[in-house]
Image (tube, rainbow, N blue to C red):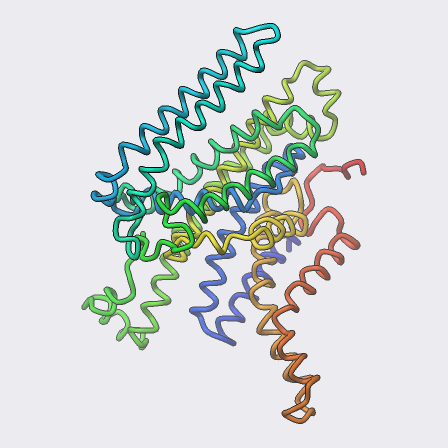
Amino acid sequence: MNRNVLLFAGMFALIAFVGFAQSWSVALTILNFCVISAIMALGVNIQWGYAGLFNVGIVGFTALGGLAAVLVSKPPVPEAWAAGGAGIGASIIVLGITIAAATIASRKMTGRWRKPAILVIVVAGFFATRAVFDPAVEAIEAIDPAKTGYLGGLGLPIILAWPVGGLLAAGVAWVIGKIALGLRSDYLAIATLGIAEIIIAVLKNEDWLARGVKNVAGLDRPVPREINLQQSDWFVSLADKIGADPVSFSSIFVKLSYAGLFAVVLLVILWLSERALHSPWGRMMRAIRDNRDAAEAMGKDVTKRHLQVFILGSAVVGIAGAMMTTMDGQFTPGTYNPLRYTFLIWVMVIVGGSGNNWGAVLGGFLIWFVWVEAEPAASWLMNLVTSGMYEGSALREHLIKSAPHMRLIVMGVILLLVLRFSPRGLIPEKGGRERPS
């Protein structure tokens, strides 16, 4: 049997084992987040595996996807719009005029007055924007801050937020790419890292946008709610037929519904990624990745192609970010940290196989599974190891309390083992070769 098939079969066997050993609700939750992680890994693989672009700002693009879920699904707050909506719109117009004026001055003016003129335009535009923006923000955030205190969204079905999240992330990626692409690769890493931190800081502090650290809970769902299922005659009848408790079965049914939706998105993105990878465009991207100078000598616009692939990969990450917020049912900017949404995604791509879409998917499943299950497995192991110690032992208490930190050790061990024994990943790139060090 094909080795890749065995790897995926083993992965699903592990998830099934969790279902039998713990609960099917836990197993399906892991499965759903595995699918979302696999989509994120695909987005990073498009950037790194196709073109060798080092993006360390994945957390920022994920957060933009989560923001899209709020802006699309939550209903608008009429009082907030009446209090400060016009001011926000006016500040955006003033900012746009400032950028346009600075751009025109940069292009049209020459001589020693060029830079001072641009500086004067930027400074004047900044103060003019803040003069309109600040009063509007104060008025919006004063509207019932315990419940709202923000403008709200469009009140549309949350599933529409998934493509919107991709578009939002793609727009920011275009801005970053215009600034950093074409320079040395380390500039792109610095730019993505800095922009990601700026995005998170804005989401935490601008309450008028998405309530900041107050969080936005009760997001819409693309699937039924458990309480509604439990009150539906057809669902209670279905639970009786299969001999299941309607309460526990409703949770499983909802998670299966999510799994179906997420699987469709994953398969569509995977199919498109495979088509792109094996197309002339994909072969050109790999040629640019392997030898940029040779590609430029053949007349290829490397910067333009890098911008394309950077936007595409970021859009995929944005879609996954919107899906994750949908699954959580709330938007919590404080939970976006680089360890979970940057480092872990990179481990998925490296372990699965950089340059291979199937490898990225496998890495997404495997690493997220290990990340979740490492803690309960470590707790079980520590309890077993310390079972012979007396209850008040300081060493026993220390070992048991240290169990949650085992996931970091396990991640490091997995990464080291893969890099040592399979440096190109569990499912290596077909026809690929080692990148020069």
